[in-house]
Amino acid sequence: MKLRLLAAALAATVVLPFGAASAADLEVTHWWTSGGEAAAVAELAKAFDATGNKWIDGAIAGSGGTARPIMISRITGGDPMGATQFNHGRQAEELVEAGLMRDLTDVATRENWKEIVKPSSLLDSCTIEGKIYCAPVNIHSWQWLWLSNAAFKQAGVEVPKNWDEFVAAAPALEKAGIIPLAVGGQPWQSAGAFDVLMVAIAGKDVFNKVFGEKDAEVAAGPDIAKVFKAADDARKMSKGSNVQDWNQATNLVITGKAGGQIMGDWAQGEFQVAGQKAGTDYTCLPGLGVNEIISTGGDAFYFPLLKDEEKSKAQEVLASTLLDPKTQVAFNLKKGSLPVRGDVDLATANDCMKKGLEILAKGNVIQGTDQLLSADSQKQKEDLFSEFFASTMTPEDAQKRFTDIIASAD
Image (cartoon, rainbow, N blue to C red; front, side, top):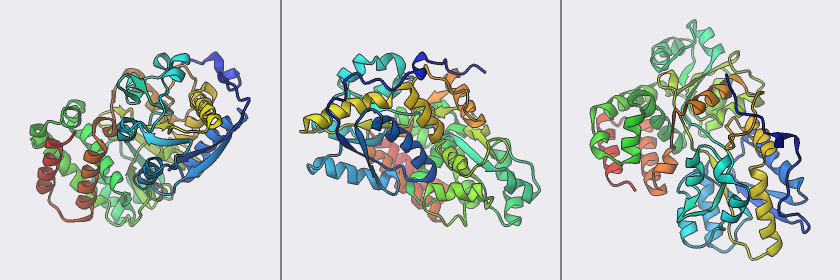
């Protein structure tokens, strides 16, 4: 398999195009608090500290849904941090429109981001009215089914190769006292699982019509009815998970208490911290083993406007550092995500990351729903699937509500 080309810059130290003559402490807020995430963010901090500046960690426990309102409140309330994480897409759109976020176009132009950031949709998600407002740091794809090899061995069945085989194995797992599917209680987890099922079962074109074109007729149609049937299967298989956070659900798979989990590739960081090896201890099925497509969502850093001149200079250094080749490799190997640069080498990547690289190289990609839907529409979708997974709502009723959300989505 041909991996991304090795950049000569990998052998170099972090470049300081703006200089660090006047170093500054810079508070950086994010929601990376699990074991794997903490290991990854430490690589960003180390790289920034090497410039002579200081990363002041502002981790906020919980998910993005918990952290983002806090971040936004601080920025709008006049207490901005130096930099803050958001997902690729429209989460910071209103902050930019309000004139509260820094324009990074000069940095991006000097460092040729339009040429090195792949796919181009990542930088497009940072661009509003022709100006670039964020530095993308990774590609995180949702479309994965993570399986515990030990759980299936205990249940006496083969490790599934696709979603249908996984559903068929559920009774054997239950008989062995194992939860078939681990799903945490945070709304974004059940909504994300539905999106993954949609791509796998209904396909890329249907996904784009529903979320990209906001086609309510397709949302109400037979293809999406099949997806809701699969979501109903997932709901039944997830009974007994009784955990809240995504990494707690991942831990159920790591410990063999659950057969599998639909979760983004950030789950790899947890398997890595637990000392488990891809292909030996766990199996990964991109596109649920049905339709090998990955989304090109992920994380980016935005920089609120600051009055402090030295901190403003440090913001530029941090933006540069985040896209430095060495930083990209060190961070993404720990995070389980793919780099945003198309010119770095990941020869040491594990089997699952290599699968993701192959799919990316083939161009079998979609945009994430954070890129296609406004924050408000995304929240409505999350509320629906949180209720669906926690109740006896029929798939038919859920599809009607989903159709209404798509009909009014922006």
